[in-house]
Amino acid sequence: MPDTLTKEQRHHCMSNIHSKNTKPEILVRKELFKKGFRYRINVSKLPGKPDIVLPKYKTAIFINGCFWHGHEGCRHFIIPKTNTDYWMSKIRNNQHRDKESVLKLQQAGWKVLTIWECELTTTKFPEIIQTIETIINTSPIHN
Image 1: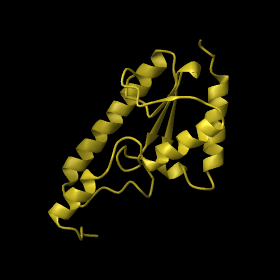
Image 2: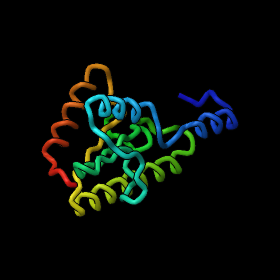
Image 3: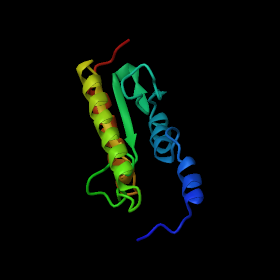
Image 4: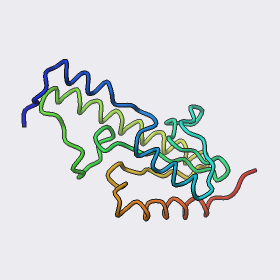
């Protein structure tokens, strides 16, 4: 399907996409806070600058947008028909950086969770939160 927006309109749309405080991040953060977990957001001292960091439990959570991080097999991950080489390169670089960040965190003893935007549907959300809780609660507590 061809792009129906002009170059300027597309630029405006893309420039309004933010990398932090996205709706999926806020949704997960609110639920964790409600359950009594306290966290830090976008900790720049950690590899990959995780979206949510629970230092007490040494747990880092990345909440990835399906398009931006190339979620294979997802309906949200559709390569644009124009400027395809640019987008493929950008997404491959994001995936490579994601893998390196996760590996560095794990090597430093952190538990790392990656949550995909498409997993945060109404039906899957309670299960995702339960998984996070389980992983957090199996982490050693550091004072």
